[in-house]
Image (cartoon, rainbow, N blue to C red; front, side, top):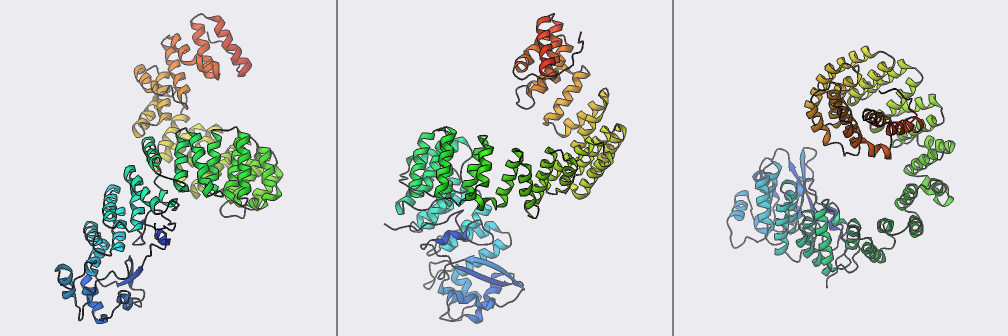
Length: 631
C-alpha cells in the first residue's frame, strides 16, 4: 500500500493569479509543482503575437522550459503571469520544425497523426488571455476541456483555481470530482474533492473520499484540509458527526479531534473524551489537543481537576505560550486572581512575562488585585511598544483613576489613539473633566476628537452637546446639534441626541424627531422605546404602543423598560392589575426604583395598603429612595 506523506492542505492549491489554492500543498514528495514564470511583453495583445515572438527560438531539441527564456530579460515593461504547468505539458507537435502560428493553430484545431493527446500550449495561452481580459466563461471552458487530456494535472489545478474564484462551490466540486474519477491515481485531487465536499456540506461524498485517503495512509495529516470547512449550522454539524461515525478513523488524529469537538458540542463529553484521548496517543504534545481535552473536562469534572490537568499538560509543553494563556484565563474565570498573579510572576514563567500580550494580561490582573505599583511598571514597559502603547496608556489611566490620581488619569486617557479604544478613552477623560467642572477643557477634548478622527465626528458633537448641557447650556447644546445635523444630515445618532436633550415637556418636538428616526431606522430598539414613552406621556395611540412593546417585554436587555412603559400606560387607563402582572415578579427578584414606584401606585389605587407599605419599605431601606406622597 502506498504511503502518503503528510500534505499541508488549506484549500487545495496552485499559485496562479492570486488563486485561493495553496502551493504549500505540494510539500508531499508525491506532488511536485512546476512553477513556470511567463513574461509577456506589454505590447502583446493576442496569443498569435506571442507565437511570432517565439518562432525564432524554436529548435527540434527544444525543452519546454527553454521556450520562455527569451522573455526573462525583457526588463520592467512586462506583465508577469505565473502558470503552474508540468514540464512535459507542451505537445512537441506545437513546436514542430519550422513552426509558425498557422501550423500551431492547425495542430490545435485539426487532429493529425502527430498531434499528442496532451494539452495544447496554444489552447492554454488562449484560455489565459481570455481570463486576463475578463472572459472567464471562455477561459474556464477551455481550461476544463484541456484538463481532461493526458498528463494535465497542472491544467486541472489552474482550472479549479479559476472555478473557485468565479463559480458556485457546487460547480467547482462537480468539476473536481469528475476529474478525480478520471484520474484516480492523482492523490492531490482526492484532497481537493474532500475539502470541497466538506465545504459544500456534501458529507456522503466527503466520507467516501476521506476513507480513500485513510486507505492510502491511516495517519495522513488532515489538519489543514479541515480548515475553513467547519459547519456553523446545527443540522450540518450533525451530518458531519454522522459521517465521521461511519468512517474507519482508526487513530487518525485530525479526524478524531474534529469528532471530539462535535461530540462536545452535542453534549456528549464522555464520548468526546474517548476520542481526544485516542488523538493524544498519537500527538501527546499537541497544545491544541490538550486544550480541547481541557474543554471537554470542564463538562465532566470539577474546576480543581481541570486546573490540575492543565498544570500537568503544561509540563508536557512548558514553553508553549498558548497553553499558558489558556491556564491563566481559565483560572481567572474561576476567580483565582491571586493564584494567577503568582503564576505570572513565578520564576519558571519569566519567559512568558517578557511577551507583550502576557505582560498586558499580567498588568490587568495586578490592577484587579490593587497591586498598582507592579501593574504600572508592566504597563509603562509597554509604552514603547507600537502594538500595545495605546492599551498601556488606557489601563494606566484606569489604574490612576482607581488610585484617585485624576489628573494622571486625564493625561493618560488623552494619549490613547487606537481607533477601537479612543472613543471610550475620550469619554472617560471628559467625564473626569466634568467632575472637576473643567468644562472648557472637556469641550476642547471633544473638538480635538473630531479633528483627529473624522469617523467620530458625530460622537464628538454629541459629547460636546452633553458637556454644554451639564454646564446648564442646553440652548447652546441644541444649537450645536442643529449645526452638526446640517453638516451630517440624516445622522441618527445626532437626531437621537437632540431628542434626549429636549425638555421633558416638549413632547411635540420629540415626537416629530422620533418619527423621523423610526423612518430612518425602523428596527432600532432604543428609538422604539423612546417613541413609545413619548406616546404614553402624550396619552396617544395606545394600541400602537401595545403592539410596539409587546414584542419586547421578554427581551433580556430591554424587556424591563418595555414593561415599565406599558405599566405607565396601564396606570393612565386605571388598569392597575396589568401593572402588577407586568412588574411584580421581576421586582421581587431584582427590585428597582421605577418598578417599585409604579407598583406602589397600582396597589394604592386598588386600596391595598399592606402591599403598598411593603413596596415602600423596599424602596426606602433597600434602594435608598426618599418616599413621596403618590396619592
